[in-house]
Image (tube, rainbow, N blue to C red; front, side):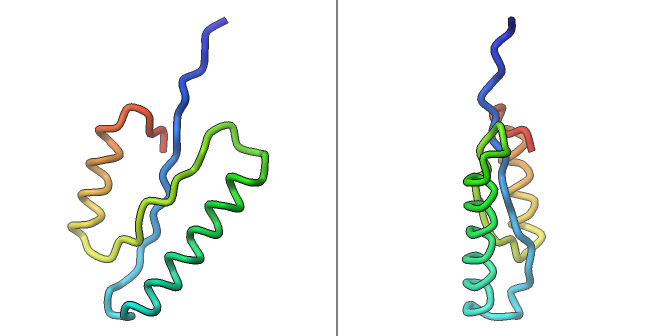
Length: 75
């Protein structure tokens, strides 16, 4: 039987910088709670990692490039 690779999944949230730092901090905290809930559910075969709250096209592009170049990231 072939061994399954240890993949990981990245979690990113999109928002707009216009909302200000307090709102973005709340978005990040909520996203981390979602990730914790997913990881603690016992229903996933692979871990989910919170990565960032993306607020600009540049940050999204950079994130996508990082995900594409990491062979362990499955989604």
